[in-house]
Length: 78
Image (cartoon, rainbow, N blue to C red):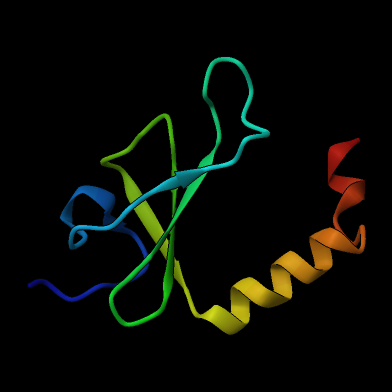
């Protein structure tokens, strides 16, 4: 198996199950997430399923999700 790193082509990741948000728009454009065998989380663009994936630790994802839940990133929505 090739090493897993930020920017690795998502199609080269080991068999993982990608999950798309139910908030995805009608065209299906959204980000998708998958848990990797070592517990890290990969994120990819659903429009480019074989394109690059970003890889985060569970702690990084937890910090992001907590920030999103508390409205920390609402300013990005305009």
